[in-house]
Picture 1 (cartoon, helix red, strand yellow):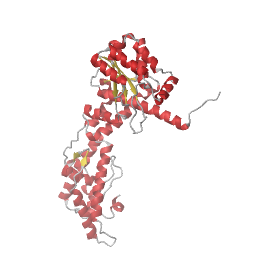
Picture 2 (cartoon, helix red, strand yellow; picture 1 turned 60 degrees about the vertical axis):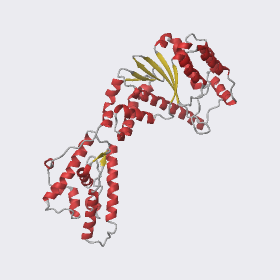
Picture 3 (tube, one colour; picture 1 turned 120 degrees about the vertical axis):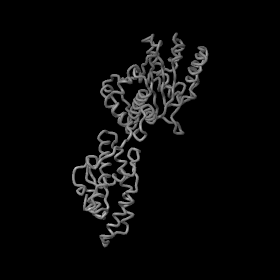
Picture 4 (spheres, helix red, strand yellow; picture 1 turned 180 degrees about the vertical axis):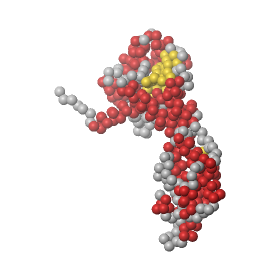
Length: 419
């Protein structure tokens, strides 16, 4: 007998569907984990259901159904009345109840889907039942779904369901005959969610933990990666992943703390520097354009103090993770952009024939323009003194924070002289 195998493209789509569905299920688990404020509540992945929440009040089982199928308008398809996702979920929950009859005493059942549910007759029937408590109306609605005439497209879907051993009509018949129908349906709810949950997770994360808005992406990326790394062994071995609030906070507190940290700058004394001010590379750059002379000790001391204030604060904040790599990158880009504009403006007319006085004039004007710039780090203004110290830092020697310093200079040949 010949065996029909899927094409490479069909296999690729199938694998993509599975991957997206798993990602969505995982993201919903994280979303529920972040929403739960009770430290004693436990959120689990692939334990009792796709996701479940256990609190003092009881258990909520979540079936997570995600579709990438679109209608002709490019919108996610509707949850149809005889949708496989819907009735497979009902079938799974009925099996739970058959195996554990007492589950109805303290369990709620939620179907989570990205499909549109507004026109679904099952959803309408459940919502109406929650208000009217009319079992007769509920059964009538279910019978209507069971006996509804299907379009050719629905028939095709139904045939696929049969091939997958899911008989929607039989499931509805079984449900109508259950003595727990009323109690079960009173505990069912269906919710529509976004096609992608990333922004929902970031919003909950920000609101719950009071993150600085410029740190939200950093916390999201690090928290999601850490959660996955910590859970991957469980997932591979098909064992549940569970967290209560206190365990979650304890394990990931360091990431959350970084996201909440405010930027505070301390003052510095010139006594914190040991060495000859004139040997600092940024000072040699200033000497090269005669911005300051080597015998102007008071001015050299003042300029060094500006550099020292920025240098010490910058390194302390980076070392204790108050500033993160994205903060350093953003500041560097801002400094380089401002310097590039100032430098090119003042050196536009400088040529190989320019005199030393002209070179010094262009360099000094570049320094002056840069000293007028006010910079920010992690959305916190540096102010005049630290902004001035910042430009000296970026024209000074390499550090463990930025290894390719100096990145800016004042003389036309500053790269050859000092890089």
